[in-house]
Image 1 (cartoon, rainbow, N blue to C red):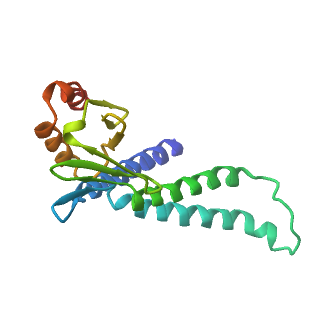
Image 2: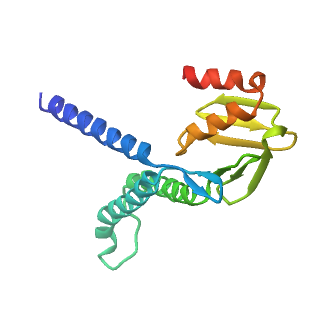
Amino acid sequence: MDWISNYIVVEIAGAVFGLIIYLLAKQTKPREAGGKIVLRLPIIYWYLAIFLLIFLFGLLVKVYYPEFKTGEFRLPSDLAAFYISFPMMIASVIIMFYYKNHEIIIDKNSIQSFGLFRNKSELFWKEINKVTFNQSAFRVYGPKVKIEVITYLAGLDIFLKTLRETVPTEISKDALKKYKDS
């Protein structure tokens, strides 16, 4: 019976932690710069990535430091912690770069996207010929450009409002309905 109470405590702690992260993410507001609105990931993602990176590094040190303390270099017999922690550390570094580099800039004439490596895509609102929504992201298509706007960005409501006002209804109605239903 002791494992049931531990399971319940872990579930409650996870739910409270998830609720706190959700509320902190919703507090993030989009930034305005020179008449343009900049949509970014909420800052909580940056802090979570840093926390995860430090935690996993500490876990690796705790697990493997006794193996190296003897003065001779040999691989530990159990590499499970390494196989789990190292990919998660890489993922947290990618999240940190994604937070710093990825942004969507909206103004009255166009939408610009800067990706993970700061590659820029720009699309004028009048050039949009298709809008889709699936897998938690809007995809806005132009003649040669595709811009993806994920739903986790702070200020998504501003993007949706601008999309409704500037793009013809027949182009965006299916995507907006699919988003509303999800």
